[in-house]
Image 1 (cartoon, rainbow, N blue to C red):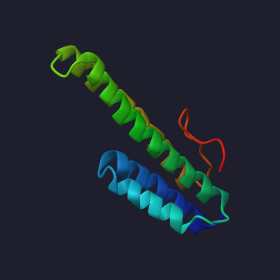
Image 2: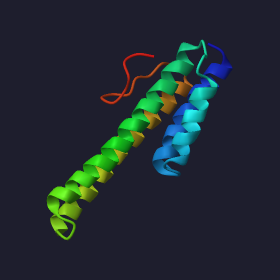
Image 3: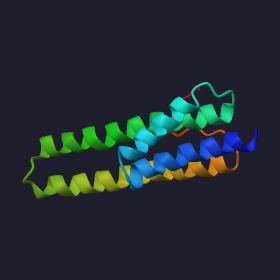
Image 4: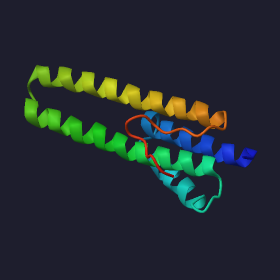
Length: 124
């Protein structure tokens, strides 16, 4: 593995975190652009981290949007208990997704493969 492999893997993990923390959607578009640019990369490290971040971003979007909508629909928009459950869910789920991204970034920086727990893709 050379330095450019590690560089792309770090960029993928950083864009995953940007998508979650700073610019939702914009970070994902950047991640898709990076994946398209390196689609035929021969490096196992690059392929692994790109695939993991894309799959995790899709799971993050689905978990954060669909479950949030489900909580509001089931609990009612004007029910205070709904908002308590919604805020607790969002904070806990979002924090776990961020933790996965930080662990992925640490592995990318140390040039190691990483599969996200629960939401990661087992193949690359």
